[in-house]
Length: 278
Image (cartoon, rainbow, N blue to C red; front, top):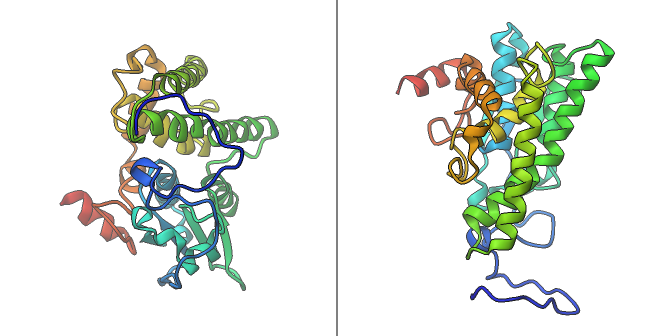
């Protein structure tokens, strides 16, 4: 494919070969492609995920809850290999009709509750255990606002900048420039917020930090897209300070490796201890 101007046809048709790195899993239809039940472990909370920026959020949240002493947050974690299409199995689609990770099935009650979309999982767990989400109205509103800021903003970072900068089958100036500008604006939003606050929503660590850190903390540390130099992330000193503090949290170190190459499955705290020691 050459870098030429594109004139859209009157009616779009699916070109299965046109999709770059993810052409084998991208499709314009929903639903399962094959029958495959999800495994279920011994704990009430069952996490189906992969250690992408979105997937990390759930693992970090669960480890933070355990660190706070909430024994009921013990969980089983099962890897969903999105690169090979696991997300289109019938069991995953039943847990998340959008065929994305993470998905959580809460079996602590009389009937299982499915929770999908990472932000919804964070809120569900925060409300279930009464932790990491303030109850005072103004503080709760601030935390929820930043949580939803992440949900609305990160697609410009991932599906926009990340795709065209790192994954597209060829480079074009317009989309890279467009989304780089937006990502730098978002980093400036965070930097200004963190200039006057220790954490995103104030003095306390919340689900807003857990949601934002895997994307923007990873970006400024060069972990995702290898774009730190390109985006001049050294300009965002407050984001860097915040990212370093979050990265040093023991629960974050533990949660970020859940459903990763280091720890495909997690069924007990000892699984993480062994992975971190290895």
